[in-house]
Image (tube, rainbow, N blue to C red):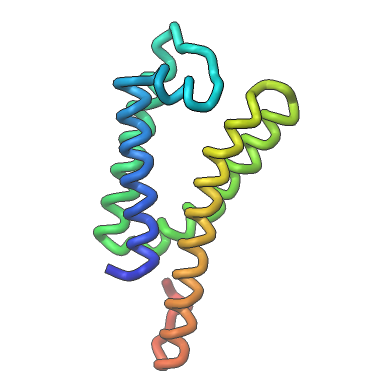
Length: 131
């Protein structure tokens, strides 16, 4: 498994766990960040979606789907931007930015690993332009 794939795998496992916690113990997760208890089912619905998304990450990592790795960089960075905007608009508590920061840190890790892999391939004469 490449180092870029490992970064995707770790992130996938993280979001699977987060999703399972949102399904099983949503108020424990929300309470840790100062959010009010969930009384509607939507946080659990989101948890199911997050689990499935995490499983996509795990499988993409196992299959070395480099295009997926690249797509996640802008997506995970966009999560941070979106969360910051929600906080600035007064629609969410600042603790939400912590979740976005984890996403952005994971995106940075993946980007660095992809860049490192590309540089190593270029030094060895492997053509990476079609990947």
